[in-house]
Length: 617
Image (tube, rainbow, N blue to C red; front, side, top):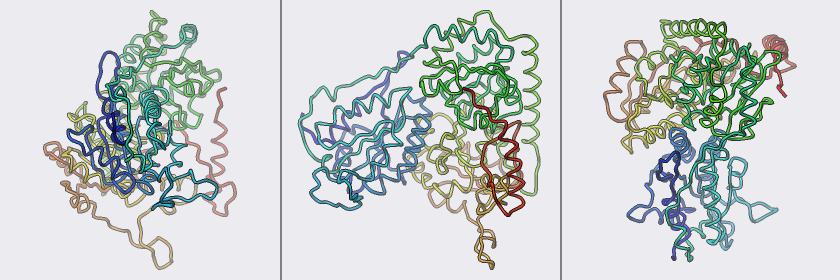
């Protein structure tokens, strides 16, 4: 079959399907693209054919479109994905940040940036990076360290093998992430003969690999001999659709379950064994149990420093770790006994091996009071009645009260993720959507769009600080274009409140974190810069209002639920009224030498705190 290489790529992608547990569907939901000279004549022409091989979406920013694609994949439990195409040059490199986020978070996204001429006839072309040591380097080589698979299609004949490798990685639970196929613009437009079977429907079966039987038996023995076990549920529980299995496992064994940022909502907050968030942004209940745990069963977590509280969370002298993970890299962390396999399959087999075993009555009785104490603390923060400007914790409470159990909250960066991790009462699996592997400012609104595309029947609440909003708000226009219903809450604290608090904690007095004019001193200490977020959002087609009181916020949320389209609620919050930490710590080094007394004091406290770090080998 004679086609251009771009036509062949698009037709192949449209024919790809996935199957898991007997359910089969198309893998790619569509293509996000911004055209330039590097892809308009090749991929642009291929996507123009009717009937359309893949649905096309026009975003406003290349980084944002990859965030949207990653959020869509996450909300689809990695069973569906988007393609993202850009021109060469800045269009391509704009995707780098979000590509890193997708790979760090283990989310499948296919990137197809245009590239320089393979023939090198017009050399250098517009936007070409010239490298004195090689003519075979372009800016797309920057994608190599942030891609799980990278290739450059320099000849039409290379397409078939590259596409099969790309699909292998995109559908792999263990190896997935961003996949980059750099596509020279002349090759895109070049025609060649392709085998007809390349374009036939192809189904990729996502297997539930099972751990080694001896490892299961050893893990069961270790758990049976433990006195104070704890489960840490990560994102792998959700991706493998193991939430029901985990609930049964926890109920039958009595082991309490703490959750990472990616794993939150694995259990509903009111499940008897659910003790909430763990680590640097954890609850008092989870972190107290973690400190005394003699065995920790890790399920689908990559154990970031926030989960381990910089390796201070698990403090028992002889604590042991058992780790269930599809990726050997993650399963072996903390010196764990590795159960390499699918979370659901592994929990089922481990549950069978533990049949009839429960935690002791004494340990079981200790869980409920810790959980009750924490729920009282959440109620206190939710009903703080702080004034004259409302607190961030209260806003979270009002949104939580307005949300049904199946509604989804989306966030990514700043102080909101820590507060949400602690405070949000998740009612159902997948209703808590946080990008915290990369904690990328600007993800929120683009990510909310991706969640809504994946779950069109669910209400989606995007919570975003003013700093993140100003970095990437333009996808409001894309949501309006697509007729998508979103409720976006912009919390205005006049700058970067999260890093401001961290700056103060390390003795730096919040330096460089407030939105202020340059003052008479020559420093950024002048009058506050007032930004009209309502007018900004309205200019892109959203219905936007400002709400400052509890009643105004509650009313605005109710009106947003009843309204179609994009609703933006701008809420001023007190940046100094923070939700503190609970039995936790995060390692951020403090300057060892400084003339500033506040830094000297912070360094002294840091030297004491880091002695608690443990390396479990």
